[in-house]
Amino acid sequence: MERDIIMKNNHRKGWMEGDIFQFLITSLKGISQVILIENALTGVIILIAITSTSFLLGVVSLLSSIIGTFIGKIGGADEAKIKQGLFGYNSVLTGIALTLYMSGPYHWIIALFGAAVTAILTASMMHTMKYLELPVLTTPFIILTWFMLLVTYRLKVINLTKELVPQDLSNWKLNIEGDINWIEGTFSGIGQIFFLDNTLSGIILFIAVFLAGWRLGLFAVVGNAVALLVSYWLGAEHLLIYEGLYGYNAILAMIAVGSVYNDNKQWVQPLLTGILAAILTVPLTASVATWLLPYGLPALTMPFVLSTLIILGARKVLPRL
Image (tube, rainbow, N blue to C red):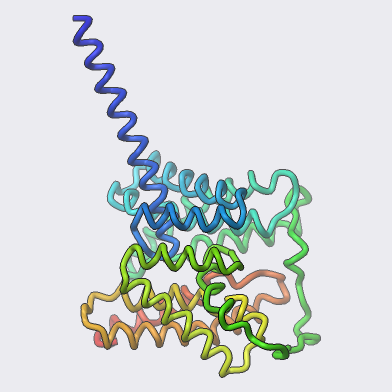
């Protein structure tokens, strides 16, 4: 009898340990899904890249993914979607963004709360978008972050950082002076997906993507290169080019349209369509950023979402696209 009790306790303990381990793996996938990749090891490397820049951001990223995954779990979401990390990635981005753009002693708590609400919004948008047969992408993150940042103008407890300042378009001047650091621009683009602006983090992130698949890595490189060249040719501000602010949306769009949401196993069509999506993100970035200037809001990943949905929506009518 005593032996049976011990065996049951050991079995329960082993099950709990396995369950916790699986939950952690899923949470790491939530981090990797930010760049549309379902790979726990990629998630670990991304977490290293974030933490190497800011320990706080690393902690917030992991906790945000855990929170998003937990909400999906206790909410009774489809287990397959939970295990893919689909309830984590929007929460990760929201947690990072609110931590960076808000100030005050409790800003990280507000960021984690925002991550939780984002998971709920993600579930809501999953239900809505399934009728359109289009992916949610990072739309929940964008909506929640913009709303939270605008709340700061009406609620005293929540404060914005000095980086986000509303600007009058009538006084706006385009500054394209200065040289472009092409090396920095090459690695800053992918870093900006996670709001990172240093070369080392960019290198680590490229390694993370190539680890998940050399095709994904190649598409990331091409997407970034396209953004650099097109933005320079169109006369974008040099500072924004080499800081990667035109690159990160192009990388995401290239991976999404050319690989993740493309069943064509050939090279030419996915590559060309991905390049088209990457090109579209450049004027979209300029447009969205200008539209948001009077509100002091960042463009975030809205250019990526718009470009990707344009192509994926058009593909339902133009299947060869």
